[in-house]
Length: 340
Image 1 (cartoon, rainbow, N blue to C red):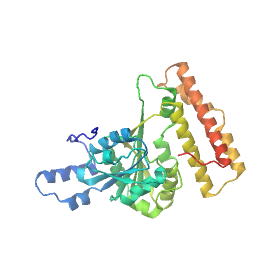
Image 2: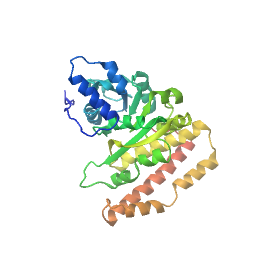
Image 3: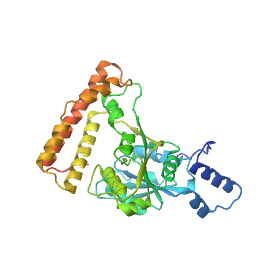
Image 4: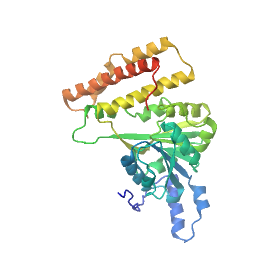
């Protein structure tokens, strides 16, 4: 059996504000006595539950769990709850290799119903969400909790998502597309007042007030839940220092699956709220099929995309995504089910 877990390396940081200073004080107290006072640690540092749904993604989940084992947050102040959402191969043997991780199972398909299962198990007063294909930076938990504590009105925070390439020397046009448009978390948080669950922190009290994720949704449930939390009176903060790395989609097939899922999630949110009728859907399709003038400007001004040929290929991907989005809406209007 392949072993994934590698014991964490002890490291310290000399410049840690607020929560980090408290953490440093807690560790100093521990070094002076053999007795550990867990309640005192909990009083100074919030206990965090990290929730990760997984579906047929064991290899990348292992990298995510390893990164979580190496967090700078105090070891006994966080747990990791992995929810297997019906993977072909059970992930519990893998999860059991990581000391702070526990595994649950949710048979009903959908990442949001799986996250709700994680919520039921979580013990933390702070809940941190990421995905199995993400690799959190070492200070991810520390910086996310710090963002929550920075303002008394803050009930949730969205961190930064760095897009990574499979081969930095030769990114595909699809990878460049993801680099430009996949996860603009600053826009989501600061303009739209929401965050994707690839990098979301929230107090348990926000879920108590707003309720769990909408289990009917296969995509977009994070946006829908953030809207309820903000409406319940909780502010949202952007935490650019709380970073996770996310691999870009590399092929058109991978991007097509995501496009269908996201399109279906948007369609379902509209339908469950109140079916807007064919006129609204027609306007949405017209918007999706609009000429990509703004995309052209963004692609041409992006220095990381080399040469005219590469830029034209990225533009072709933009057109592909727009037409596929419109086609998916038509498919759903004709009675098909949204994709997972």
